[in-house]
Image 1 (cartoon, rainbow, N blue to C red):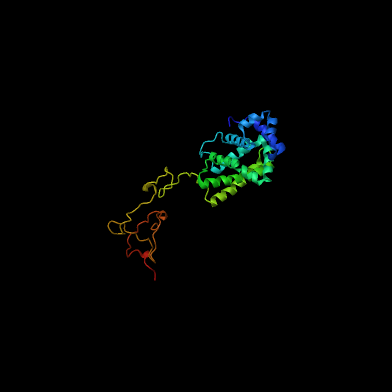
Image 2 (cartoon, rainbow, N blue to C red):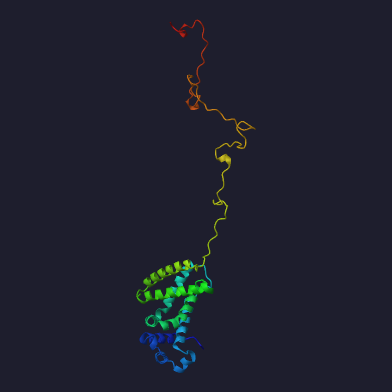
Length: 280
C-alpha cells in the first residue's frame, strides 16, 4: 500500500456498506461515492477487505494514541482494557451506520465472519498490548480470543444504544469483562497485578514514631524477677494486715486516712484511783 487512505475514502467506503451491505460493496460503487478512479484504487487495494483492514489499522492507531507500552500506572489491567474498548467505540462512531449494517450481514453469514475474524482479533491483540497485558504464547492467544468474544457481545449492545454517553454500552462492557475475568481466573490466564510491599515478617507492626515509655513512667516498681522471694536479695513478701480476733484495731492501723488525733496518754493506775476499780 503506497499511502494511507484519506478520511474521505473511509467515509465513502462505509456509506456504500450502509447502503448496499457488505456483500454489495464494490470498488465501482466506492469510486463513484469517493470521486476517485478505479485505477487509483486498484493500485492501493486489491480487494475491499484490504480497505477494511486499512480502516481497522487507522482505528487501532487512534485508540492507542497516548498510551504507553506496557503501561501499569493507570488503574488495573481491567480498567485499562475498559478504557481502550470505549475509545474504540468512540473512534467507530463516525461510521456507525455502515458498521452496524456489516455486523448484521456477518451474523447471517458465519463463513464470511470467520474469514474476517483475523482483522478483529488483531485489533483486540493491540488493545491488550495497549493495556499492558501480554499476548505472547498460548495464554496470550487465549486472552485475545476472550477479548474478541467480549467485543462481539458488547457490539450488540452498542447496536441498540442511542444514548449520547453510551451508558448501556458501558454497562454491557462492564458485565462482559466481569465474566471474562472469572473465566480467566478459572483458566489461570489472569496476570498478577503488582502489589505494594507488605510488612516484613517478624517486624514490629507499630508506627515507627511510637516508642515504649521508660519504666519510671509506668508508676510500677519492678523487682528482680529472676531471684525467688527472700533469697539472693529478692524482696521478702509482706503479710497482709489482718486484725487479730477480739483485739480492737486502733484507728489508722489499716487506713492512715482514718487516723484522727493521736490518743492522749493515760497515767498509771494506783490504789487510790477508786473510780477505776470495779464495784461489787
